Length: 200
Ligand SMILES: Cc1cn([C@H]2C[C@H](O)[C@@H](COP(=O)(O)OP(=O)(O)OP(=O)(O)O)O2)c(=O)[nH]c1=O
Image 1 (spheres, rainbow, N blue to C red):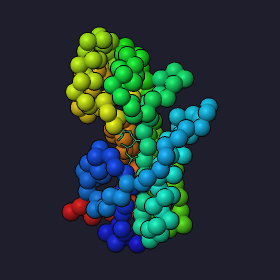
Image 2 (image 1 turned 90 degrees about the vertical axis):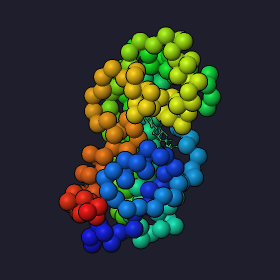
Image 3 (image 1 turned 45 degrees about the horizontal axis):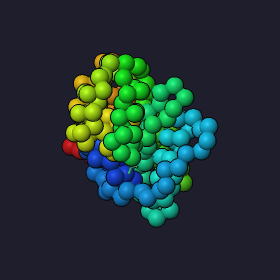
Image 4 (image 1 turned 30 degrees about the horizontal axis):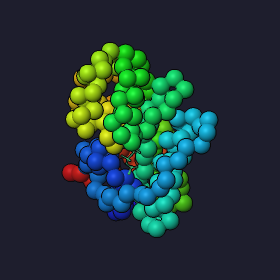
């Protein structure tokens, strides 16, 4: 089957995932999955993001068995802690204070459901933050940017001022690992050139 004949569904409410997938040139529908993003005690970040991506994808795969379903999940990991999206300004402040001056790792899971196949993988990228004063963190939180972002920052936005160095795929930090997606699509039998033929 050619990519142009495939009904693609992005199971995500994340505007970043939509933008990254649009940049690749795919045509797709967006149907956010409504799953409780609960954690299991002691679960590793890699396991967590793959499990949540699968959960999000699975909830749509049962409703749209003919479609190619794409689902993702992102968390930030520092030492033994895992940070999701901050619930309020105080939590965002605590997250950013602990990221300041250190290197953390952003994990993004990616699950693809196609016909009877289900692929689940993850990618991770290390991000080094510069030192941040409490007043900088406070005024950053006041911009509202931390909300809805894992770890309480957006590298593609004002959070870019904090990221001194990154090691790995930038798109993984933003929430959709493009390079990993390409290799998973190949695994499902869709060569990369089919992906960009759809856009031309
Ligand atoms: C670290 C980081 C995260 N993020 C975002 C990507 C994700 O949207 C978000 C993590 O939240 P997720 O729970 O992965 O996703 P979501 O709730 O936004 O959307 P859905 O579950 O419907 O797919 O953090 C950035 O945009 N920039 C960054 O630098």
